[in-house]
Length: 353
Image (cartoon, rainbow, N blue to C red; front, side, top):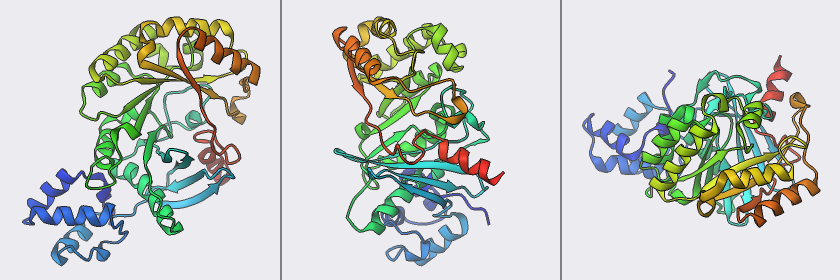
């Protein structure tokens, strides 16, 4: 029977579901503890949950719905998981090791329709959204992997930056966040969760109005409409004169800093004049924004783009600094294991064909 993942329920939703079927509120807390603290992978292993409740859950839900297809481990400790969904589709999830903790990058869609011209994720068009349970289970898959290693490590940070546009799957993405940040479960703090968007302006406003209180990153990648439209089709729908007011609304409403992601493409958007134009675009937002420069990982299918030289990266960085812009260069992870998002999935599908 194709039952949904129990990971898709928040504690409140699980409590209501059980109470509607005659179970005490306390039983939901026991189930929640078994899932996220004891981290059982089988309902039968829920020792402190009433047997009638366990039977009911077995009839209506699954715990494990994702299967590990391939796992690649980098010399720097990064682990990339290629996971098979129940319907046979493939997704990617990545574990990254930082000085500040262990971060997991999750996927929200099967494929992507945004169409960024430099990105491996968009090579395969979106076929469906992931459910909140499938997104939560990616985190649990990684945590189970860490548990098996026996070093007492736990996932401490989440970035919603895998395959797909998170804001194009807003409801399931939001429910996922509510599950993982619940203090009785995984207890991942809101400040340790970052959602990345290519720039769906109406959803940025909705995100600002939500109670999620997590970090936002905007994939900007260009300082003007002409260039951004050329490399990101989404800019046709939400050009900068629409996008930046939405960002202003987010900054005012949330009072949180925003990360502006900027991938450096050789001789395309990485010149000093581009840095000066970017500083001008940021303008009054300087105190609330940080530019994260991303060295490009070449993708075979996007051979028109090359990685910027170290000299260009340094000049771009220094120019922004001199303009009073907060800027950093992203530390690369897993460069030896198909580092580009969506690359491993794309290669496996081609191999199968």
